[in-house]
Image (cartoon, rainbow, N blue to C red; front, side, top):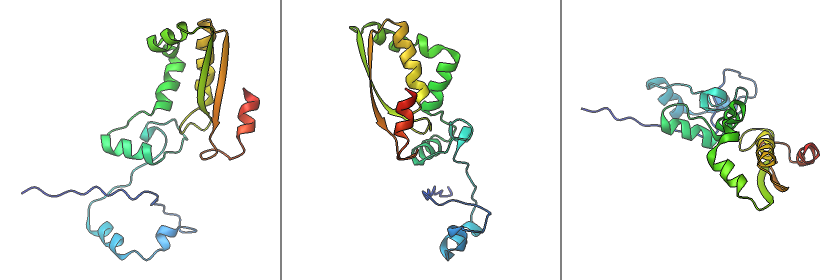
Length: 163
């Protein structure tokens, strides 16, 4: 006979051994406590390299669900792009190089501008600017959207100044 298995994802339900300010630990939750005591379970790490993000980078629902669904570490776009920039393969990527070479003098970049690394990173924009310059782009127009969710709502000014 096969044993049934249930995967329960409780978004936002964090586990911590710290008692002070711990709403989960303070709550009356007899059903969850009973399930925890009577059934196999494990704690999962939800940030950094454990979910395909750089060390010290917080995860999010999308990242967590992707990794749980795959049953392995799935390297997120941020890390894949950052690694390609670091090893130089970003600048020789055939699709990017061909697109840059087919420009008629100017390029438009639409980007979520942030240095947090959850959904975007400004280092990727700077790498793309280098690729465009090396490919002969005469003008580049940057159309940026500010984060304000994973970063401070007023951080946009800082990012614009750095561009």
